[in-house]
Length: 171
Length: 205
Image (cartoon, rainbow over all chains, first blue to last red; front, top):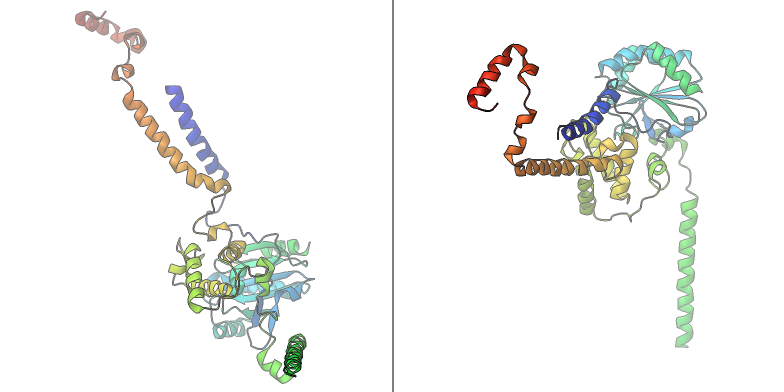
């Protein structure tokens, strides 16, 4: 009987222990994007300054960085300088910002104050954010020249992380 | 005479219909380009010519169902889908129940897709494509998910069996038999003589 109880106990606890050990290093709040290694959604976004829009597929043939941001998001403000610098030093990569849950006026005045090296687009109906599966801001997607999402970064980017992710998008 | 009139009338109607269809088809194919000053104000057209979103067509293809004509049926179908989708910026709340801006936009997207004739499963899979299975409040009954449905039942039945099994066993069977009782020396040599005395007094040795 004792052996039986032990066997049942082990059968229940060992798989749970295995699950615990397997996931010890994982960030519980990070949910892997199912879009990695998939073609980037061909969203159309309106230019922030009005007049004209961008169909994402028109940028095929060059690496693209899509950064979802908002003026109310402190980490977005933190990473703004790194993104602007990276856009200036990597002319072969197209950077674009998508304003998430914010007004065009706020975004324009933020960019006027802090400067920018790339275009930002409005996503008033949230279709771009939904198509990219955005949970919050900042989220940045790295797309290779073939239009495939190679990586996604959640949180504020710094120079080193950007450099590493850009190298992956260039491959 | 009557017969010939009828025939010619029919021919005329058929010819007129043909001309109408052909001219419409030609118009549809050759949309005159908008003048540059109008384009400067309006910008480029909102989406592909058929009104469908390129990102959605890329993910789902064409709608599976006919385009609903009735607003009430679009609303009802959209509401039924919003109940089954998880709001990604909330904690375990359905898109239908969340007041967040993202949930409002998701409800708008659901309605748009339903209005274009996309089926419930197509709409669900559109959101699943970007957010993963996590976005479904009820994970589909397949693969590892089956454990979610089966395991509680198995554990409940197993527990019931264990309790019944224990209840049916005679109490004496669980009592430690004389033979299994540890000898005094094995427990504590210093206590051996006392244990021996107790057993003698009780008449068990």
